[in-house]
Structure formats: C-alpha cells, structure tokens
Image (cartoon, rainbow, N blue to C red; front, side, top):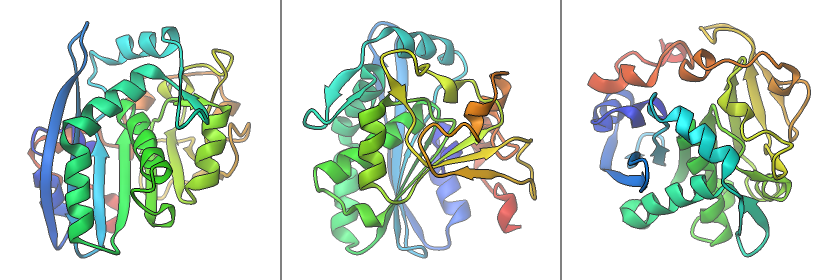
Length: 260
C-alpha cells in the first residue's frame, strides 16, 4: 500500500489486493509553497482484514534532493504538547494533508467500522508523515494505540530523541523497514539538532527478493542494523522488495511475492 500511494489511481491496487475492500479517497495538496512539491495520501478499508488503511505518498524522484535540503536546514519545532521536537517540513506536510480531508475521511471510516484495526504506512516522505499520523492519532486519543500497525519504508529521521521515546512508549506495533544502504533513512543526521530514529528497525542488507534474510533491531538507533554501514545509496531508497513506486500506475496485481 505504501507503493500504491505513488499511483494516480491507488484504488486499483486496493481492489487488486484485498478480497473485500472499499476505497475512500485520494487527496493531494501543495505541500511546499516555494517549490510547489505535491503531497498525497489516501484512505481505504479492507473488510476481509478488518482494517482501515491510511497510506502517505513518498517523494517523487525530482523532489528528493530538495527534501533532503529541507530536512537538514529547517529547524525542528516543538509539538505534541511540548513532549517532542519534529522536523517542521515533515510536520507541515502531514498537517496540510490531514486538514485537507484525510482526517475527516479517516474518522468516517472509523465511525462506520468500530473495532477495526488501523494500518498506517508510507515510503520516504510518506513514511515520515505516517509516523506523525500514528503519533497524532494516539496522543489526541482519536484511535487506540493497541489497534494501530505502523509500518514504514525508507523513513527519514522525523524528530529528536524525545520523539523517538514518545513513539516507543505509545505505539506497540511500529516497524521501520530499511533497504540496505538507503540514504534517506540516514537523514537528517543524528548530530544535527538531535534527530533520532524510533524503534523497531527491520533491515534487509540484500536485494530484498523473496527468501532473503533480514535483521530486526528492537531499539532506537541500533548499531547492529543500518547504522552499522556508511556506504549510503539513493538506488537502495527507490527499490523495496524488488519494486519501485512507479509499478503501481496500472494496478498492483501480483505485487506481493510473499503471497504467491
């Protein structure tokens, strides 16, 4: 679902991969007034899994460089009732989408389907926004933490150590999947304004094809996972489980090799 957020028609992927599903809506906003970057997210529901889906789109290829610049030059801001500092660019992008209709669409699905889980996901910038979405939902008591599954791909560092500790303490099911030497997973750097990854990390130090091993590190900034390498790579950021976001343009039939 993280990859399908790159498509102009993610409803095709939702239909392809869930037996009983409904697509709510895709929302797109201008998330950077100066560079006209576009941010996007969608909501859907899988009745067969009894899960609401909230997926945030990542960076387009020509946006990545500028977002790296933003991430390392924009000062973090204090949010979540003063309990954490987060990157302002990521936080503003999330709020723009949240207030443009994602929040209302989510609430509509939640109220119509009591007891369902919530799956929150995204890749790259979308991963940062997914992390902020899950944190917002729990800290504002909109949705119970024990029913949230947060799984992101190529997530940059979103906030400081207090933000990492906040997520660690309130969201039991939170996983950051990292492909090998993914550059974006290493920005902003830790030495800059105290940025810090939250747990848990799932690190594939390989091409992520079917059957390849992974290492799970259930601590913040573990030196046993991706922090153990310094040879960073942009190609590793764009390719997860042997697919790119562009593959979802015409639907997602057969996309999940683990169910074949």
